[in-house]
Length: 198
Image (cartoon, helix red, strand yellow):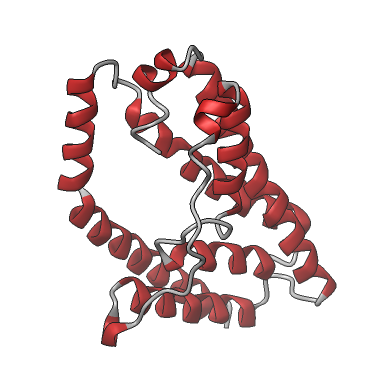
């Protein structure tokens, strides 16, 4: 999708790239906020209110996510095998495609999930025990996920598209290591928070 929704691709489809990606990012952020808010409300209904127990559960989830993302012992992440329908690119106006693709990606779990961090994020929304807290967690997730579309901002020619593809391939491994590093940092912060609330 990063190679499809670019200034080059949108120009070829007679759509405005700025409008398409704006719709994409807004829809992704909105979807994340809606799902997060719903999950936070469920947490509130269950009586979860950011207690020490929920912090410990979050630490265990981050650790479990690390095991999956590191493929420890051959672990494979459970996921659906569905992508957004690329026929939309040619069937609908750019902003409609932006909203449709962005909303699906902001929900996180209706397309292929490539990192356990997606599951951890939305369980964290439940653990906030708050509609607002859950919506905030989900909105940040949706904004970050939707923001990845900006990687194609300079693709205005076939050569630049090839460069983007090569760049993405080159950064695939370092990005995985970076994700693990971020998860380790979050685990350390969560464990520190759990220790200070005892």
